[in-house]
Length: 267
Image (cartoon, rainbow, N blue to C red; front, side, top):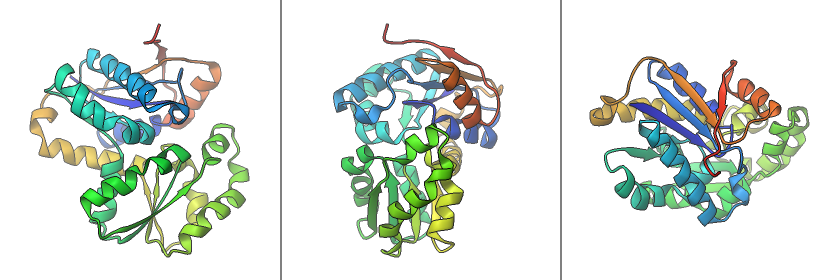
């Protein structure tokens, strides 16, 4: 069986590449729903419906465990997928998100004053506050919506980012945050610029660094899942829409040339 990785677009390839480096032997299947990206503009029911269709596809690809490498889906559909969909569709398999592992890392490092930058959808959902309240309600958390960052990254506009980041990060650094969670799979591309502005006293928590380690720990603690995973190093990539620009972006994000098969699950 295989490890599945799902994102609403191609940003999750950054996490997929990091997992491949950290756990190179595990067979993986990636699916990006590029036909419907961005999910942040969709209704909760639409996000759940698209995500459920993606889960169906990945389970049909013989995935024992699926990583939802998307903060929007983790915020808007993960609980329903775990509690409603999974018990009926595949009770012996698992679906994991990225929000809780990220917060667990902040807690493990002893931070008590957290910052989060994310899209409007993530900030408005309150998912980080909700999950942190369950884990450790004594920890403070401060959000800042950063809606211009993804368009900058996707349109080769990184050189224009510093003044925008200054504006976004100023309210958080004034609150003397100890760490800053990069709450979108795109944001690691701005890590250097963010670090230059936030300064050395702020630890940047990037999900492409956190998720592979948390996944390895999860597999150690769950041999019933780990033992099912094939370890031939095979990687497959699928997307619901594929253009020349998508293919170029995918190679850049993953860090090397990959072949992505187009498969429209909604036809």
